[in-house]
Image 1 (cartoon, rainbow, N blue to C red):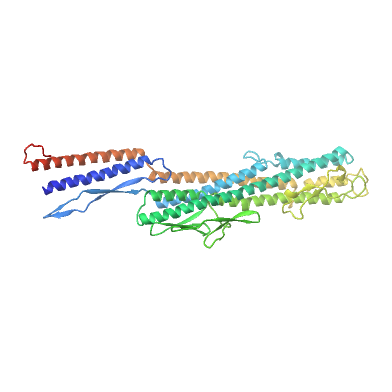
Image 2 (cartoon, rainbow, N blue to C red):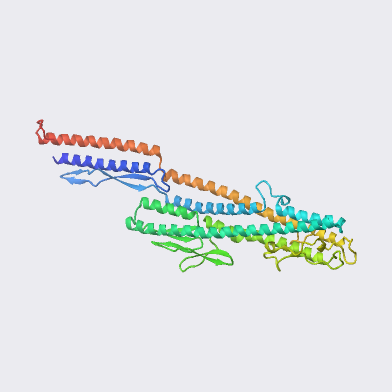
Length: 467
């Protein structure tokens, strides 16, 4: 009788283990499309045997499950997500800058841009004035093209400032998203440590990993795992973000018109050195690249205006008096492109004649026209200086686009590797389900046989109603 009881117990253990395995498989299939879900695998283990008399009697098998995850690969995906998100944010910002100047991937010619065309038209109008210094329409043409040039400088500068302002808003938005995810990670840290400090915590770890992946889209992170299965997060420049079940929210502050990031414990300005994620790319564009473009644009506007003003003051206007500055510009190059303006719309303010030449003189008009071909802007002609600026913008944008394509390809490859390990394969789950069902049916058959033998033994082989 003891042997029959043991046989029924074995069959019961097998039924329970097989049912557990079937449930795990069903759960995998149900969650195949859930973002961040990690496939559960069934682990089989032999139960401890017991000794009856002089024999060891087995106690069957048990089934448990664990997430099929590779923590090293998950961190590689996380780090690559940070790199790719940064390159994407940088590409997006630089495309906006490129659009300001009318550049494209197929054309970066200065002459085809609004600013380049205005610059050419201005110096062409001055060249036309040389042969017609007393012609009012020629003089008016110089004033009109000067006004267009001023407008082109103002527009480009204001649009660059607009992109910078958008990036400031992006910093604020990123910080808000980051803080919500930091709080989520800290909460999950606590739940994981309480539930399973030394083992896989299943869906809770999936949720935490998904939060980390989302965080990586916004900011660069360094991660340290602790013995109780919690993680500590810091920024790439060492500011503490999460420790155990405590999160340290980021903040923002305004510094010289820019939105800077406050973080760490104790809080301090951590903007400098932040890399990775959308925030890293946004800060790189806002604080490094765009200021460089703006500085080159300001220098171009300042040098054109000051050189022209100086030359115009050296000549004589039609009424015989000395010329005056026609461009209003800031005292230094800083902000010159946004501040440049015309001081007059009077065509007779152009000093075409040289001293003592009379109203029909044109030597100073020639001097003004020659500024277009003179190395007056940091050792280069105005057109060459603008070409260099537009070339830099085009090259930076192209490099950012290429880098983002490369980083996206690497991220896709790593994600595929992770998913091949941790993702749900319906073919594999179907094969497992068939195996577990067959095993369940076999255990059920053993149970039925043992049950029938038990009934026969109780009834001494006599067929009765007892079963």
